[in-house]
Image (cartoon, rainbow, N blue to C red):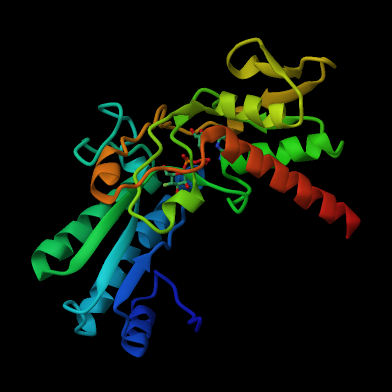
Length: 281
Ligand code: G4F
């Protein structure tokens, strides 16, 4: 494998790489992909996630490869945002709710536009949340699985979260890498992710209070294990995501293999393993 230095904000650099490599397939997985961060870095997110996609498509044109390259754009269920129907499918109208979602909306349509204008082989894969032990630490599932691991090992007492009632259609990343995949067809709250994660280390969480004052206590000891900090709230939230994988199932025969409970268990156990080896080093 040859790695090239590159950046989606640098057109000449992209043109140079495409002309050197002369690829037959390009997968654009590059993005500032954290939704909350996109509120703080809206312009940068628009530049990388939105215009970056245009730059890459245009590099293909500049090098004269429009008829030779197949282009894949990592699109996102964040396009549905304030959802207008549930579950969401390929025909559900978009209503993005963050600078990230809006930038990805531009990327989605510029892919469609280049396909129609230049007859390019270019497509969007609208992927719902896909998680694994390799998920970045600031995304909610990994934040929960890591904290539960640290609590299990006595290294941390409490986990601070934002909106516990947002719902996501969480699948295992393994199910999303090789095929054109939409979603699992199930939705769970952040609260459920917390409860299932603690169940892996044989702890039950009992919720007390409401809103920002809500706390999750460990049933057996009464220790507060989960608190809410408004700093993790988003100015505008996507309350519910639930994908309809019916078309991928019908056309590609795709079905997710890892269920929700197994996903949570694998993440917590991997973080316990990781936290153990960190202490040994
Ligand atoms: O894990 P999250 O940060 O992922 P989010 O916003 O759904 O976005 C991820 O999936 C998208 C696919 O739909 C991708 F396009 C995107 O790039 C990214 O990979 O947050 C999930 C939910 C949100 O509703 C958030 O408000 O969890 C809620 N949440 C509650 N407490 C929290 C926290 N999220 C984070 N990151 N940290 C918290 O403490």
